[in-house]
Length: 311
Length: 255
Image (cartoon, rainbow over all chains, first blue to last red; front, side, top):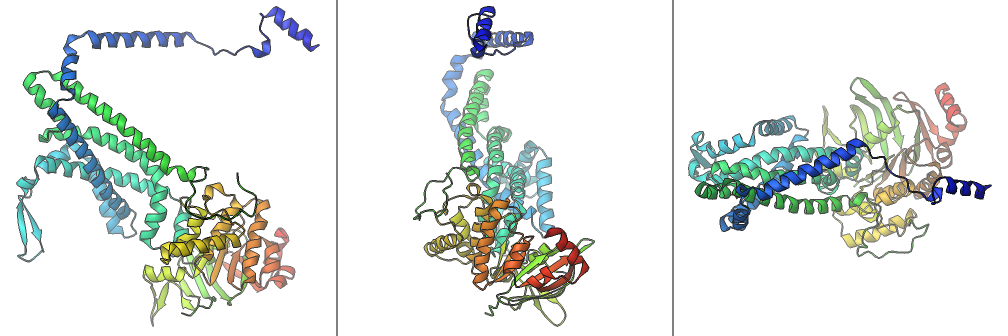
């Protein structure tokens, strides 16, 4: 019977055994149209980019590793690292304040976050740069005494300082929300378990809450770093010679605007791609506790398991 | 230090918003006593435990744990809340085992058991890990020290949680429905560990639906309903011969 049907299918529908025939996907007309359009568009853009002499790829290559561009890149990296680090620390403080049981503290943190998230970072940067118009002198000392010194705010708020202050304060507001979101992802039971063991609030935070909040904080922070890296281009308005400003300074002299913008863009792109690697590594590290893989043996002497092994 | 393992409650009241969950609760648990609290859901039995551990504060009434006013100190006119450090110290003497285990998922079984002694009492790590091995062995989990909670079954996790509480050498152990989140097959292994503990003379308060455990192990039994203690007495006596109609009705349903 079986051989009969096999034979039958073989004779009626080609030479391959019907059971072994590959199953093919349906290809619609719109799929072919999509392929054609995308390829045509790609070829069009590529030819235009490669043949249009105004791109001046030679100039791009010439300036790509130009000294002032590299110096600008270094400054951009410095601004990113510094303001991200300071912003994260300040954001952690704000997040802890915001989850405080003492109402005024929580409200103060929440007002800070509202103000700094609700205004454009460009405006904030210009504001800090011009803060001396508001407070000409900064006095450091003990209130209501003569002890202390006055510092000229204008001298203190050099462009780089203003950039650092502006970026840090703004970043802190965003990081505070990210960290607070991470905190609230830790279940109440964990906090109760820590409390019932008699842990202090500090220990509970460091050993229980923060390690568990990390998996949800890390990816968002990675996005912030990448955003911050590109966001530093805003400080060019203060005349800080970071990557974009360095490029601008050159094309103001040579009028090769597009090639130099390309140089800056390519560097931003390269750095962004480089940054996404450590981000994925960190994500893996902190999601490890959720995995079922046994951790590398620590220096602990194991005795024989008494009951059924897990693996 | 008056380490006596007693619990005394007089006319404890506790409300969550408009809902009063504990209405004039009286408790008297002697050192080394095994007390089971039974009752329907929402009767306030878990809240009693959480008050004894300080996870909830009582609104009014007297609550003495280990012979000391818990979480508060008494003056002529009022009870004043203790500073967090003092409260934490009192809590270290009361172990709590949760329905949902609440092991720290970022720590291995060893680290979980060591967390109390090392992070709270500042004990030496070498000593603590030795103790952790002993404790894990005593709950039948020797060799599981390097596993993370996610790699352990529910029953194993709950036994690690018991070991973690025991590591603090508490005078009192509280169990909040310790077997309710386990599949029936694993209930036995956790109950066995608890029976073991009971023999060692530690004060235990167990909120449970395991009537078999209550009958076999408990000294006293408290039946709660709607925020009241309906009936209390010798465990076997109450289970086999309940006096109150409400207790009879409940036991008929669960036995």
